[in-house]
Image (cartoon, rainbow, N blue to C red; front, side):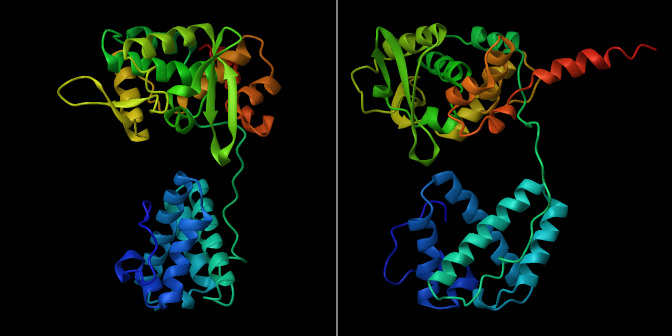
Length: 322
């Protein structure tokens, strides 16, 4: 479902969930159009596809015969059960996917009303991000532990450094082409293609500039400006391919690099973005400038990455002396 094939006039019944298939050809095409034409972000498409497929399978297991037979009671009961089994943000995301799908089906005159319109999701308020953040010395430990005598090492150091020093999202980093690293005013600059089609440009930190130059020169990438910046490694030859590095591979790589550096904290792709923002703020940076550098629409989002209070909490808890 996440990698939708081109929509044909008569989609095969096994391409869509059973409850949609039995509702007829119009419902099937409208269902596929929801993902193919209405949702442009690939990550959102995958997440929403999983959410609606899970919901429709749940409905089918409880005797709902067709997508046209889904009622608010079904949506409410599903979200209630999901809230008990999963986190509140997951339940809210599933509800958003279900609600948007049925809005699309209503506009296509497949169903008369949206059964999710009146259903409320679980309460959820976030003031502090959950992303694990590294101490600057730990981040430096990971970077210094990478063996840069190989193309993989040069690539991994450049990718981690990019996330730390530019606050780049992993999706934007992996979506870069070689030409997105360029010289302007005698400094190296980055061009990031962020969510929603936004283009974000910023100068490189001098350390990141060193990492990127070493990677581009060491792997002879400058001659392929339209090629992906971060690439997979060819098995058995330890050389870069022309295939973009998938996000799952980047996550696995980060786990290996952290373990190799002796870091016990369980980290992920987003850790380095949060680590960079926190380090910037600790060194006198402003929240407003951090939001601009991170390409956040609001400083309220940036505050979720500000983990300076962690050190305050740790210092205070050590006052409990018994």
